[in-house]
Figure: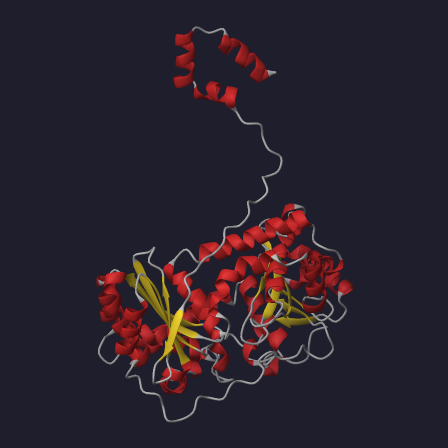
Length: 505
């Protein structure tokens, strides 16, 4: 009625006044043409196809695998030297040593100090980074194409000739310890640390990749040098170069920078045995870390998921997409409908061996048990009923959109190809990603959720002020283990310091 009256009055105005109202009373003008609010957003359009240039590769005489992706639409070149081992090779009592080794690569070489490395890369207008994850350690450089050759020389230097100065080790150690002191008092972060131990026990993926307050002080320079000598070798590495560069030029630079990198006479370290430990005998484990005074409780549903090479990979990532994200089921049920959290989501981490699946939310301490129940309910729902096509279409679109954004940068493209190389996958799989996602059916998701994400052998971890949620939690889970925050030990699958005594029941 109001808009109709405005239109009537405007229609009666002289042309000069009508022009004045359009120019100086924009709110009135907009009222005439205001779009009708739409109750639901339009459906996603069909995804565009991906056409990444076919990578070409060559293996140098020393065993270094070199992969090149020509991508001339960009003026940049990115190069990544990837070592095919990461935190999973940390010795049992030295968690964090692989990560420290990788981080220290750019902190000084035999011919360059840390400031010199930074200054030289900055002078090239580029960036250089290094670090370790699970299954791989990496050093990357990103520059304008005309500066590729000097950038490659620096990349080769930091990988091959780090000196691991004592002062740099101590500086990095203190940074890690400072970060840990903060993380150990964050319910969400601490819960993720505990979940790894609960799911994987004393196996490789169970430890903290960046080290613990106990392991970091034990790491000596000799340990870092030993790890570098053992794993940083050309026949255990992959060099990926991508961007505005011809393959012939990339191979020439690879040979110039890395061709004389000597392959050790000793054989490669034996492949690690299965890193994913079986679930703790006795089935589901419910662990509470009591943190008195915590502002919130972090609630996690955790279990083993899949490896990257699993045939169900695409079904798995689509199933996870149904659960996570702002419009995913977990956030819809826990935040939007009930207001119990600022956000809830899930993460299916794929690795060389079976990685973890974690669904999580943070909530008021008083509703910790409620959120645990909701996580279980949503996981059960995913396996007990098919996902509606309308819901599945939007979740696939979200997944595909994220994949597309990851390929928009040269560094992202190089990282994608390096990941395929790490896990021994077809380098052309990038071009099949969208079709593989689109092909996943509701029936496949339901079957995957029942067999690979089931609640029966999953674990529940809650970190928070236990007095506010422990009784309702025990009504759901009589086998709850309670560990006081001061008695927690992340270095062992028991999660208890030796003198902590029996579990609190």
